[in-house]
Length: 578
Image 1 (cartoon, rainbow, N blue to C red):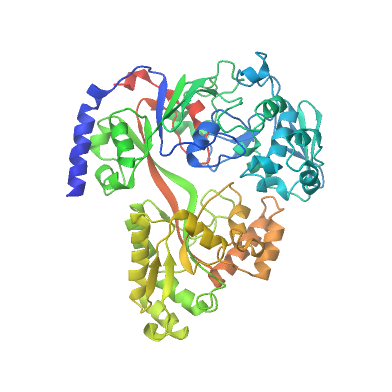
Image 2: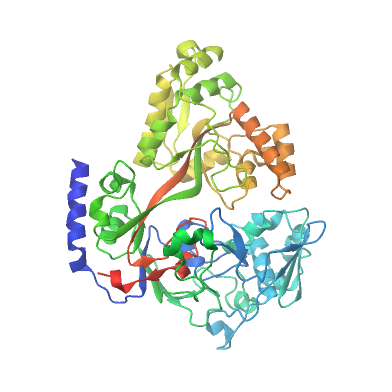
């Protein structure tokens, strides 16, 4: 009945959207944010909502190629890719000239250009306690002299500016040199993150290190207006440096719809407006009435929009709506606490649980079959990913046999196991009930503990969880970012919530952390996966995928959640505005 009602609302909205549409500016992109922004400081903001603003107003030394898959890091404000010395511990980066900052009173009405010292200033900000950066960990244990720098600077902003950091040098205005404790092959990904946006010294001083509400960027768009909790308006930066839509070789000719603007100067769109719309159904209705131009398909609307073949239904296609099923770098698993006296000490019990959960059904119910069943510790597109068959198949008889070997035939004598939810949402509670129902089939009793997310995180950091659904959004596309979640030095309060400890795994982790991509590294990654699949701290669930819908007037649209600076590539075609 609910699906029928949604379908009726869909038809009404689609047939009336043209009458309700206000096309005030044909070159204005209308988007939505699901939450308000607390900060636009590139040293602090690191969530999906703020990244939509930060990455399109600030820029970094590197970015991801907009069209290539697998993703490839390429220069943005850098002239070329980093140059390493023989030790691979000294990195030299040449910076482009004539990169203007957005006009701001801080610069006394003078044009200000990016220099190497601006990157050095931002790196210091990341390591400065007063900034409270969420990104300092990326460089804290990597650069030479960080401990000495932090001790000398303390909480003094003036000392931050005047105290040298041994691991960062600026021999001239367009050269940045980083000195590392050991090789850091993940650095190219780090230098493409918003944390490494350049910040001028004079801005740091005049704003007293408070960039929560002010953007001092070089990006294709500048901050025109911000009404807290309501809307954000970005305008095209007329003095944006030379930047062009990417070109590709002949083998990509089949993607002609994405290549027609190759070589043209960016950006194409004059204005971007973000409206804060917290309710998913409100966002959906705004999309149908063409008040916003693209949207992630809400789960509640999936069955009314996507047919059994996984394609958009005719009602949407007939109204010039397009859709893309997008692979994400987010993935999930079911986690065991290896310090738990029951689960952690009984591998047969973990095997029994692993064979008792029907993950195909879980994916069908909770992702509308968009999730991709996981078979590797690394999501698709990450070096080391394998599309092998999943290690644990759903097999009730096997599960019962392992439960018997664990010492609990048909669950006899087995204490109740606690499954913790990640949040109090209906979906999380239903996931808990699913797990409870699955394990009851072999005689395992499950108690569901419902948490809000802060409580869940607190339990994880204190090592108090027993059995739960784990998840990770990759910070950068390197296997090290996944494997550090199982590294013994990262046990709680670190991110290794499973408290997994394995000497061979740790030794391999230390090796691959400083290795660039090679056959040797791949072999070591495969061995690390074998260790994890043997010891079972995790039962892999799925890689997340989701539908992004857009109106036909939006051109050049190819989405990746690792490319948040995509708006400069987009174009609005007025022929399809009505």
